[in-house]
Amino acid sequence: MPDEIHVPIEREEDVVIARQKGRELAAQAGFSMTDRTIIALAISEIARNIISYARRGDVMLRKLDDGARVGILIVAEDEGPGIADIELAMRDGYSTAKSLGVGLPGTKRIMDEFELTSVVGKGTKITMRRWLR
Amino acid sequence: MGEQLDQRESFALMHQMGLNDGAIERRKQVVALEPADLARIATISALVLPRIDDYTAAFFEHLAKFDEARPLFDNRALLEKAKRLKTEHLQGLVSGDYGRDYVAQRIELGRLYAVAGLEMRIFLGAFHQLLKFIGSQVMTHAERTPLEAFDAFMSLKKVAFFDLGLIVDVLVFERERIIRQQQEAIRELSTPVLQLRDRLLLLPIIGVIDTYRARLITENLLEAVRARRAKVVVMDVTGVATIDSRVANHILQTVTAARLMGARVIVTGITAPVAQSLVALGIELDRLDTVGDLQGGIELAEQILSYRGSQGNATGPRAHSAS
Amino acid sequence: MSVPILKQGDVLIASIQSALSDQDLIQLREDFADKIGQLRTRGVVIDVAALDVLDSFATRTLRGIAYIAKLRGAETIVVGIQPEVAFAMVQLGLSLDGIATALDLEEGLAHLGDTANGSAGDAG
Image (tube, rainbow over all chains, first blue to last red; front, side):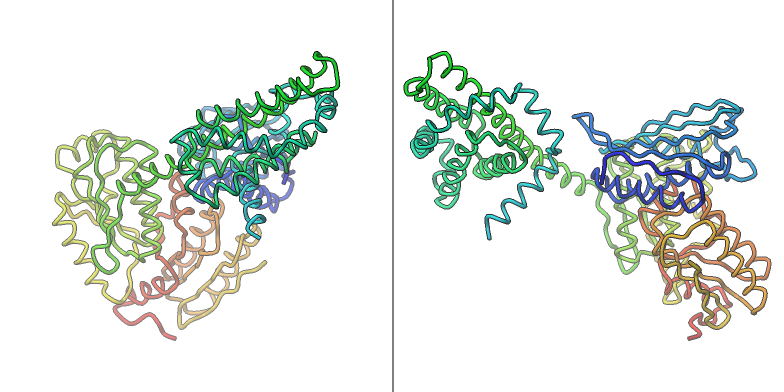
């Protein structure tokens, strides 16, 4: 399996594909069963957000190795409507019609690193990393 | 057959150490190994190959002088294998091919040294002697100008340093593995899950709880709930150094996760003042089953179990506070 | 891939075998809505032991099924959540609040029997 994988997110079936690939890559990197589940869950949430809000996007998965430690990089990108109020979206308990509201804040909680950039009318990009302890 | 197993284990260790093709190339770059070097090495390979047995013998003769190398020499089978691998090493050294298989050979020898408990400085000393021996022979017998012979030997030295890097890394890796195992054992001992009776677990938590340890505790507990089919868990935090909001959240998370698996958690050991300060912090203690003392908690647990008896147990939507 | 819903007495049981797409989950909820409506149902058991992840959509669907069941006077219990899945859910902040849970199918059925005024749940 290559070190970097792209999963186009166009249909909701792709959410399952993305998280399964994420799980496999995490297993390759040596993550524990628990961590793999957490990573799969994070991917599921952000991929699902793409379908819900942007309808189409891409999830990139890559194994990380900076010499000192090993991890996984997940980048979700879309050219959707963007998030108007990022602060609001990242607030616990915030909910829109299609989401429970745990998606973004919850995902940020379970990842070691989490960056979100979004421009209204242009799209959204979420970059997350989780490292092996 | 045994050799095949060794080879597989070496490849597995290479994988664990991250020695993929890219990593191997980078290591060659580190020693600046270039095609020109390979050409130079080829010019002296005919010189080195016939004398390989001498070189191997010299290497081990030097090692034999040191007490620290005793474990290697005491083990007959290990020593024979080491000699065989060393001979193969020297053949590979002048072969010009330093790919995955060559690296696997190095790893195998490194593993052997680790098993034999060979101290790194002893190994380095013997390695240096070996290089000196080869070097002086190359300089004496080379049918080239001294300068060319020197250059060829320096090219060979690059590969030798490439080898050294690998052996050293294997020794360090294996030592770290032992340390990791010991740390793991210590962690397991410090977060025990005890079975009090059928379907009832006791989880005494002692000491300082950082985020990492909290995760471990939760993971251990959930796995125990699954393995022992626990219906009730008494989680005693009497021995926890400080119960601040972070620790309280860890406790809440553990309780919630166990509930998802159908197990009810009774938290004991939260004193009234601690409870008050937690409530003041906004921690939803009312979602917890809390009992002041351990004994009371166990009694409640047994009550729950005997009530449910063999009719099964599940966690309903409402938690009852019994404190 | 549709999930079969089995009937055991007045309890409906669905055992999910593998990863479900969103569509499958929606289908399951609709199937439950049909069956709960057609048959006299006292309890619903959903076995998720084979699921390696329960995300917000799955959680929401389960709550939807439980809500439909409750409207008809039936109790829902979700069984078989694996340790890693429970852990991940809690870390993310997902909750099955309001829905009973048990370790496995056996425990789940026992619970339903237990809550049905003391009568044995395992109707066989």
